Each structure stands twice: as structure tokens, then as C-alpha cells.
Amino acid sequence: MKKLVYYFVVAAILCIACKEQPTQASPDRVVNEDSGNVIHTAPAEISPANKAKIDNSRSHAYALIESRSQGEDAYSMLVVGWWMYEAIFAGGERPQPVEPGYYIKFEDDFSYSYGQYQDVQGGGKYHLTFNTDNDPKLIMVDDNPSKYPEEWSILSKENVLILVGSNYFGNNPKQMKLVKDLNPPGPGI
Image (cartoon, rainbow, N blue to C red; front, side):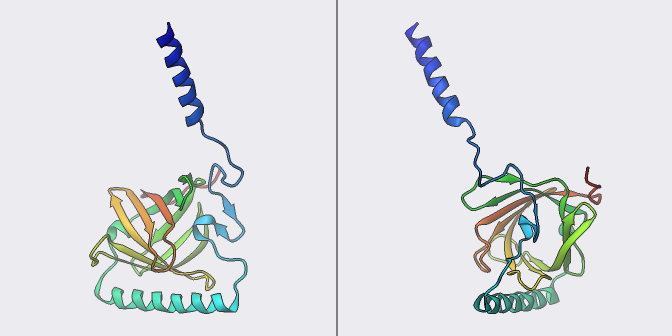
């Protein structure tokens, strides 16, 4: 009888300890904000010093894209279909599911666009290279001049793409999971 009570108490403690605690700071889903979804955020205000850093980083990223795209073509694994955001992980937090319909579409001409369903919210230039010592690298420069460029390590398997931020342009605390869909995103409900 004592063993049964003991097991019950241990099970109750484990259930309470493992119960998900709600937090005010992190919503259940990543949602749309005024500056775009949290995946493609832009700062509301930029100091002149930060603007100079952003401009310098963007110039460097454009130069990297230009030089790398001279010798490499776009990869069909990236440009065929739409990549639907499934989850985002921003350093220290648990992965958060993304509101349905958010996508990114890569094109053969090294451009990309992103949005939700039929609403295109932005775009830019990118380059993916497999000519690295480690994982393949993806550089993205948004058309919005107030956004820093981003570099991602790519982990992929079949129709899943994991973007792991690198510290080269400072997006290292982020990771994202995307799933390929061959059809354009449908209308929202």
C-alpha cells in the first residue's frame, strides 16, 4: 500500500512539474505586427550610428550575393514551391508555432518575397551556396533599407528546411522551421 501511495505522489509531482506554465511575454502563436510578422521585423526607429552599421552590412551582403551568384545558379530545392513557416525559435524561448499562411518564395533570379496567403509583405535578394566548409549558407537582404541582412545555415531533408541564424550579421539567436508546399498559400479564413 505504501508503494502505491509513493508512486501516486511521485506521479502527481511529475505532472505538476511538467505542466506548461503560461507566460504573458510569449504568445501561443507568432502573429502579425505592424512592421510585418516577427520573422521579418524592422526596427521602428534607427539612430544615425545604427543606420550606418545597417548600410555597411547591407553593402557587404549585396557584394557577397553578387560575387557568389556569378559562379552558381539558384538551387531547385529552394525555388520549387513555397516555403511555409511552421515554427520560430528566438534564443532562450521555446519554439513558437507560426500563424497559418506565412510563407517565403525564392525565385531563380536570386529574389525572394514573403507574406501571408496572397498578401505579399516584402522581399529582397538572396543567395544559397553549398561551397562552404560546414553547412550550406543562405544570405538574405530585405528590400527594406532599415533591416539588417541575415545569414543562415541550412539544414534540409526532403520537404523540411531549418534555418539556423549565424553570427555573421547578428541573427544567431534565431532558428526557423519551414515546410515546402508546391501550391501557393490559400486564402485566410
